Image (cartoon, rainbow, N blue to C red):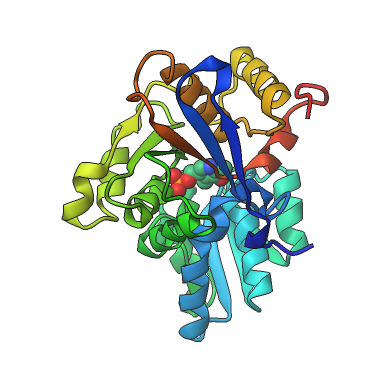
Length: 294
Ligand SMILES: *Cc1c(COP(=O)(O)O)cnc(C)c1O
């Protein structure tokens, strides 16, 4: 099965919990069960550029459970390119990496220490000039431009607020670029103390759009990929109420935040919220069985 953006749906949840504020979800997770969500959008222009410039191989960086790595493996394959994944740590053979290998990616584990020094890894790689390198998580201008097209998947003009989860902030930057002037973008950081997030987003935007950056930093649940019982309980409860599955790293924290902010009066009355379901469900495979009810 190939990833397909025509599978994206707009789910209208109406007014959850009797609040005045309506919530809808843009289901980019439906692109594909494994290769899903925002990564597909973030990669499209990198791939286009790599092909146009005559590269035969595309390479990038990530952890053993990286949504970015597996999406890149598939996207490269479908575009007729070979791929290389530089993986942080003693790459335990995660389902994510197995999947990436099945799409033809060459997996190269490097120590946590040397993973930090990208230039050295790249330079020590044979024929590194023949590889089109993409930053970890797809951070960069082409990534943001690709993410801007998420809002063209469906007609999103009616929404007053667009909320998304943030790792590198590339998707948030893209949404700011792609949104209408009256729409407010709110990014929820899934990392603890990522004080550089606003600057990372600003770095991808023209100065005229810097005033549109809003990030919330208090909903990381302990940090990247941390998923305390409270979050797991929320994911199960949210699924039972909406039939929408969420992932432990990103989207669960996004939905939780929105539902937490609504009764606190964070949004003005008659706000109409769009939450971006950015995918990432494949990451839930790292949980033990029966943790989640979906
Ligand atoms: C990578 C990812 C994000 C974060 O995207 P950034 O552009 O790095 O901020 C959000 N949600 C999911 C499911 C992801 O895989």
